[in-house]
Length: 193
Image 1 (cartoon, rainbow, N blue to C red):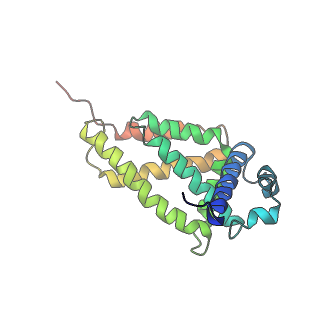
Image 2 (cartoon, helix red, strand yellow):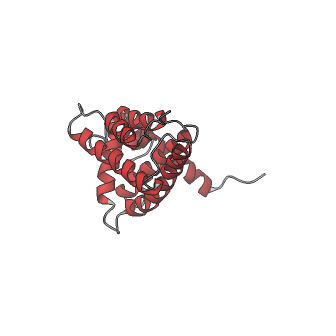
Image 3 (cartoon, rainbow, N blue to C red):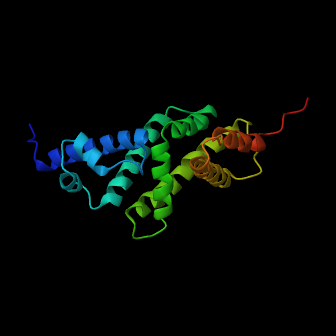
């Protein structure tokens, strides 16, 4: 039987911290949440919490990684057009995570920021997954085929990211409708008899 050493205990505590931060940011917001609250939930002091991360930005980046990984697992089961609406609805139900995403995405343009690598990995992978979905829909005859799926994927991701930013400014903005509108514009014309 393998011994449980300090590394495994450290990784377990780090995972606990990330789960707590994800939960707190989701319900209370990214800007309004003190890291002291996350530390307290994990029975740590603030310096104890920060022992597990290189910086506050590193912690926030790891929270986004966990959010994306959790979403990726749930989304593997989703294959219908409704899937994209569900993703948008999830965002609307966790405004603190939307705020964190938008803030960290902007900060990630700095190649020295801890979030840069996350977003540099995230977008190619996301474009590939969305393009594969769109390719299936094109093959089914549900979407137009005159625009390559890879280009359509860029467009859909841009709409989803952009509507999140607009929604943060004005919560009355409907985050689902723009996705529906783009998919309607991309719908294949009906086959005539």
